[in-house]
Length: 302
Image (cartoon, rainbow, N blue to C red; front, side):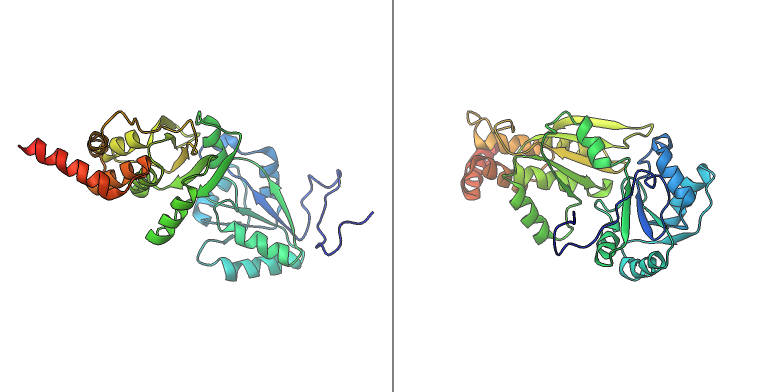
């Protein structure tokens, strides 16, 4: 019985073929996010058996291959050459060669330039096979202590102020757990933005997962802002943020708004951000909170 009409044909491996390296196939090979022992037997078999390997950073991949005694031709494939290099890789695949695609760590094509070449292969009807394994987002979610039944993966937020604001505004009412990636030098800014747009919520900061210095901090956004105002972040982070809902840390309406602003300032937010955050949490105009805090500040100076 044939498949649905108007659908592209897809390669389907038989039981006898699924562990073979097939010609003309792109293999998405997940590699360790820290601990080299996490690589799978099948990943090693594919890396050893393909004709060539496409890597985000050939230097990092060479270290991985050398550790396992694998020697294969390497080509670079990263954000700034993905279109041109993707076409070249596809030409080689269509000529019958096999290729393994790896990223610096984790699963290729997830918040990664590999997404583009998978789309290109789909357009050209080139077989793509996945070798599952480590993924920082899923690993962090599993260890976060927050709800894992439903979640939204956002990856890195845009560096553009307008796009960042639009993205966070659209996520404000999202009830599912949120997953973000962030580099250490942008962490404090991102935590402050999350607090401003979402209000105070439970949070798990996961860094250096599977490595010697693995750390998981289960806290809330306000406390995290205060902590990283004093402590310089190190390592790549996965942020697991509680979704909107009854479980979120709602503002205590018995606490005066000016006191809540002061608490946020003490936690590390600047005055304007603290006022905007309290206004968002309480669903009132920013000017209302500003006036209340101004009166409080003037009394404090007397």
